[in-house]
Figure: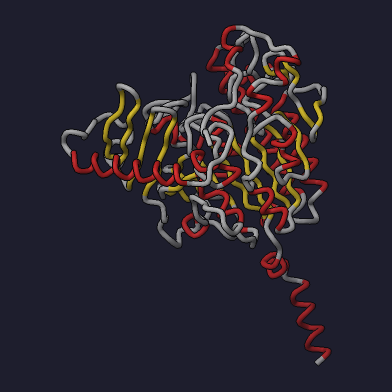
Length: 454
């Protein structure tokens, strides 16, 4: 009997795959900022240098029909953290000091009582980091937090063990100031460091990975690239000169700036992937990448209509890639209807955790869909940005945005060019009714701050 047991142990010891099946997977979530739907080499722009994200797509699954919950950053990123519609978690508009639009430079005293300093994701909301930490994960976030700058809203109070980055919607990539206000943090304290923000986030992410390589970890890297720099000089997107030169001479054009920031981010992502390879951790790591909303400025959202801030596809449909060697197929492209609301339940399921009881989640575990083993459970999705509204049901999309909008058949008209409102009034009425029922459900949900009146 002892000889049999010893033999079995020897077989297991020589079969790493059997041990890997028992180990909790690492989870790496990478989010870009204002990246266009087409702005990857693998998405149809071979002139855009993104070899590392192209490699990730070749080794995993790329989605062409993936949506976020809002056409701009703060509410979209709040849904990633909570797995809930912005109208349910309370963070359904931007946290931003709009006086900077008129050249105002805040003093520290003014900033201390401004919206950017006092508003944030409701403290009652449970983040994915809290769920994964409870499941035994080390948790770290490095980049754009965008869910509140007051200490009670900061990452260390929301389930993360480590944080380096900024807490509002944008900074200058080199000074790390937000319209003149120093904004880079380590943990709960502001810090002064030198360097290009994308490189700093990559450095901190790799250090976190190295510190926690012997235990399961959740690494969240929400870049601010290729978002424009938040400075009073309005210089646009920033990158080191070496990346500008990849696309032409100096001084850089707006398009050069944008492309350079995308390539610099891709380079940083490549270094993170290389570090997973170096530690032999890639096989047991689920890596997910997508943009927080549609592209703006010179970004390319082809073939979609609209851009950041709009309810058309170009504001809401974003590039998505997932890789998990041995668990997800390689080189697959799927048009399954999925959204960022699925991320929270998917990560929880992958980690062997449980969704918190008593909390309504608006998504589901999408791993079976990514594996090609099941159709997507999602048949509908709803959006609201102030008076602008949109709903999708199956292949139909309705948009109401001031004097603009219409009813569109996305199967035959992904560019939302032909308004079928008059031709298909019964479908238009159905989508409007579905949107109203969704809005009633959101109104009936337990109220959350910071914007709702309750």
